[in-house]
Amino acid sequence: MEGMTPAKAFEDGLTLHTALRIKRQETKVLLLGELERLVRHVNATRTFQTQTDLQDAVDDICEVFPTMKLEEILTAFKYIRQGRFELYGNFTTNVMLDCLRKYEDENTTTMREQKHQQVKQEIMTTQLDVRRLIRDLEKDGKLKDPRKKLDRTFIPYPNAKTDYYTGAQQTDKTTEETRTQGDEERPTETP
Image (cartoon, rainbow, N blue to C red):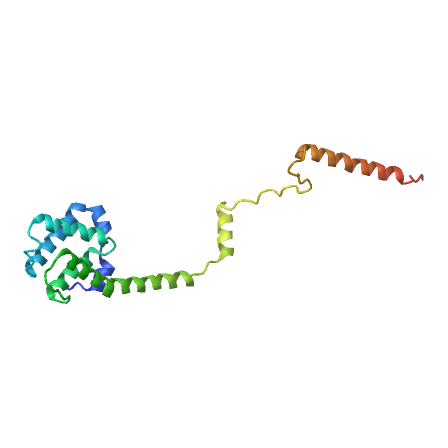
């Protein structure tokens, strides 16, 4: 942890949730060891008397701060040892969680917002060449031909007794009848 800054911990660190998922026991033992060291340093042996008290505090950290980086938590412990956070009275789990919240508000939140703004700016400034995409998809055969257009000459009514096929047959008959009637009405020319 020598030379670890909040910015470096945020950039290069491993999220506590991910660390617990990959190596749960090792992560908890690491946090337990560092918390025990912190408790001895701030002389809080009356509030953290047993190993169970320390384990409960580690479980609370894992539950309350799953999105913080493991390195950030260790950096916050270092800052508590250095006296950057005011400890009034006893050092309890609540006081430790408040110190972690203050660290998160001062450092992690601002860096998350800056990272979010960068990602937002990158997304808004990217351009997509649609014609090139269509050309590439057609070349790879992934862009299919459009479906056949539906025949819109027959529109069924909701409660009609005829379906599409009988309606189509009737329209064919009526078109043939009109053609033959039109031919009969015309006088035929004889050459």
